[in-house]
Image 1 (tube, helix red, strand yellow):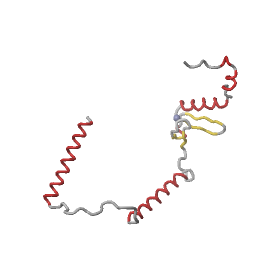
Image 2 (cartoon, rainbow, N blue to C red):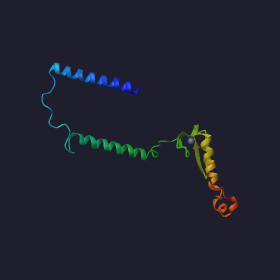
Image 3 (cartoon, helix red, strand yellow):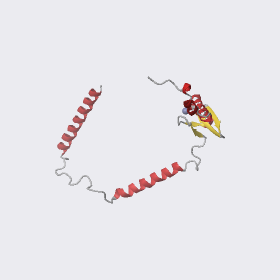
Image 4 (cartoon, protein in one colour):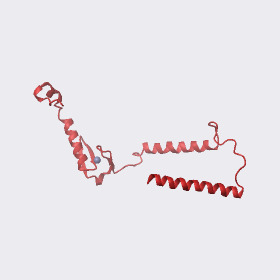
Amino acid sequence: MTLRLLAVFWTVMSAAGLAVQYLFGALGLVPAAHPHQVVMAGIRWNYTTALDIIALIGLAGLYWLYRNRERFGGGAGYAKDPICGMQIQKVEAPATACYAGDTYYFCSEHCEQTMRRAKRGRAVPHPGRAGRAAPHQQPPPNR
Ligand SMILES: [Zn+2]
């Protein structure tokens, strides 16, 4: 299929190129001499420099707006799922949880449970160090 498409495109392209060449040749539009310089030799100030600067200023403005979006009320009513990073509407969030006074919004019950498990693991002191001291609690070595 890919090869067939390639062949068809190649044929059409070649035919179109030949057609344009013969058409221009028949109308006498083919230039006799090639332009001396097509590509600029180096970077110079010309009419596009002003456009470049305007585009850069616009880009900087957009970035500034993005950085200050909360000050202008952007993203209000939306929250980010701390587990998967999805953006969710606070009122439509399928699951919410409150930890240490902060409300978290989740895209699904699954993410909420992942968060709960992570929080539980952090709250309970890790038994790893104590367990390593007692040899009978060591997991069997992998074979
Ligand atoms: Zn999620």
